[in-house]
Each structure stands twice: as structure tokens, then as C-alpha cells.
Amino acid sequence: MNALRIDKWLWAARFFKTRSIASEEIGKSRVQINGQDAKASREVKTGDTVRLRQGAIERTVKVLGVSGVRGPAPVAQGLYEETPESIEARQKAAEQHRLAREPALSIEQGRPTKRDRRQIERNWNDRWSAGIDS
Image 1 (cartoon, rainbow, N blue to C red):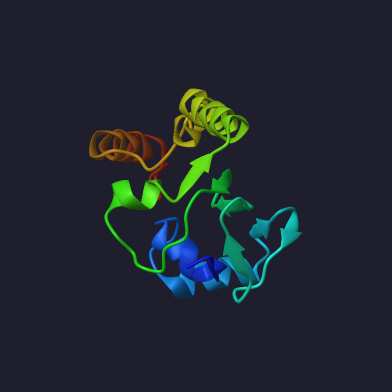
Image 2: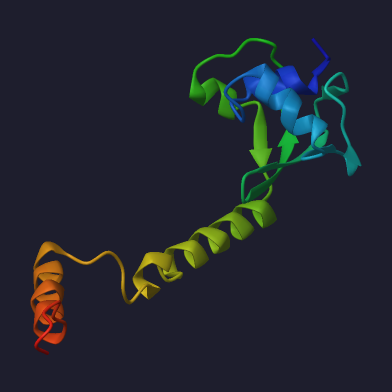
């Protein structure tokens, strides 16, 4: 087998869980072969460079083999080789994500705890009265 549809190859190489997800991503122009946007029916062959985006992760891989069968992960990893630039960029992005501040930590006031609610109610009753004599 010299060539295979790109959606089937991406599925067999375990980049996407199903062929339909691979086809959707290709349709959204998130996959390129040799620098050109791909269609799901485009054939990929050994030696091609495939650039794909999975969420925030962008990968550039060189096709080493073609297989239409989805096998175990070690076999699937033998179908491609990720470029050193892609590995470095992915590690840099992972490091930035790890060092980024958690957005939830910037919230100073959130929903009050049970203790806070009791304190608020205590203060509220001291400040306001529904009585006429105040």
C-alpha cells in the first residue's frame, strides 16, 4: 500500500478517535499536507509532511508508513515521526500552560460559605429593623 486517504491515516495513526472526527477537522482546515489545505479524500504517502491542530496543540509530523488498520499505540506511533521544532513548540506551550495562573484564583469574592452567610445575616439584622419605633 503506497497511499491512503488522509482521514483514514489520521485515524489509524491515532491522532483522532474516529474517522468522522478526522474528516470534520480536515473540513475545518486544521490539517495540511505539504503546506496545502487537505480534503478528506486526499491521499497521503510516505515522505509527506502533515501539519495538524488538535485543540491548542499544533503538530508537524513526517509520514513514515501508511496503514489502513488502527492497531495498538506503539504500532501507530511507528507510522509517523514528529519534527523536532514541533516537539519543542509543544513542550513550550505545555510549560506556559503549567506556569499560567489559574483563572479561578483571581476571583476574590465568590459564593459565600455557610459561615459567611450567617455573619451577613447577623450584621443585616443589626443594621435594619422593620419596627416603627426606629
